[in-house]
Amino acid sequence: MTNKDIQQRGIQKMNEWRADWNKFAYDVLKARLDPEQQAILHSVQHNPRTSVCSGTARGKDFLSAVAAMCFMYMTPKWRGKELIHNTKVAMTAPTGRQVENIMQPEISRLYNNALSQGIQLPGRLVSNDIRTENDEWFLTGFKADDSTHEAWSGFHAVNTMFVVTEATGLSESTFAAIEGNLQGNSRILIVFNPNTSVGYAAKSQKGDRWSKFRLNSLNAPNVVEKKEIIPGQVDYNWVKDKIDNWCTIINKDDVKDSEDDFEFENVWYRPNDTFRIKVLGKFPKVSEDTLIPEQWIEKANQRWTEYQQTNKKAHKKHNQVLGSDIAGMGRDNTVNCPRYGNYVDKFIIKHAGGKANHMQEAGNIANILNSDINATASIDTIGEGAGVYSRLVELGLEKRVISCKYSAKPEFRGRELKDSTDQYSFLNMRAYLFWSVREWLDPENGHEAMLPPNDSFMEEATEIKWFFRSDGKIQIEKKEDIKKRLNRSTDLFDALANTFYPIPPKVNPNGLSGILW
Image: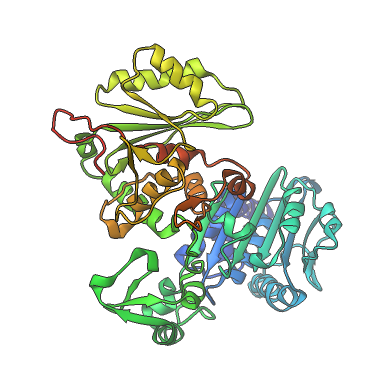
């Protein structure tokens, strides 16, 4: 084989590895990733932001090192011997020990794995770094320090990657400093055990900016096969011991999605919070003041997805109620939410650009109502929605549109509105409507709610808090307080809540009430 042939084969191999980082990880780094880890590496290759919530000993630090090495060697480009697309990789953690004793040894192992096969990767191992002959091409690891944010200022490059392990231990200000460098072909990978449900890392598992993964130790190959498939990963005996000590056996009839109950070897268990964090890779059980637990939404999303594979017309036996939340100055989105009984069709989201267009939005709603003679629209009329409502009344649709005022008394036809048990009262209509969504999604109430998967809705719903006032009435926290945490309004949730405004029953051709749940 000639030198030209060898060079051509090398170029071909590099092209294959650049097209599939999992192949580079396997061929060169000798990384034996399980299918879930491979999916995460694929995400890092193709998505700017990847968040991994993990159980104990699930290989998250090893995977982080693999991703960093792939980015280090698969992204730079040359013209001849000139580096024209430089690459910088920063690996960080809350403590120096995590960098020096956990992250960097994984990098060294992968580097030496390649060397053991006769593959000399460019650069040399120096302390916590891989340094090449080019100052603009390197991988470095260091402790994240809130007092030295200027340390991040040197990471502008054509290709930039930040790998953060134990991400729940970093402050919001540190992440803000990192975010300032996410330009060009950039990546950020954060991995963490879900010790807390607040902060930057926790938000990354809710928002739509991130590609999200959760590594459950119950699914680890060593646990499933009851033998060592991947050295160093969590094993069967460890998981079985934690099940025996951190879980309670329950009857199948007592299973609750909100409790993260699970089946293992034909027995049903209820985990405590330690098991949720350490084994399931889930956040601690939702606090009592959270309006909607994440598990309820996930279940409704699952039912919605399954419904799409079956008879997608069954929901038409219920009348449509269209909840509308109109955007205006300082707000980004107008949201329309069509609900048919227990089924919500896809949210209709329109970016408004901070400008209210009452006539156009009124026309859109009028078209929906005119195309469905049994439909009713419930419009938030505090603020921009008032103009839309007025226009629809002018169009002769006054009997089919509802002025939904959150500040109004929670009454219907002169009677006070209460919860489904007739025990709890509400401060205002907003509290009643939000609580109605809660009761609709609660699996124990049997509504079998079907809700389209939407990251923004998940983020909004799980951020809303509620409490009892001194007079015993239920109150939802102020919108301004929720907005401070989300950095935006709860537009999607509000639109859904509007669909639960009490309206006079309207009988459709099938004889079913339009307000049936």
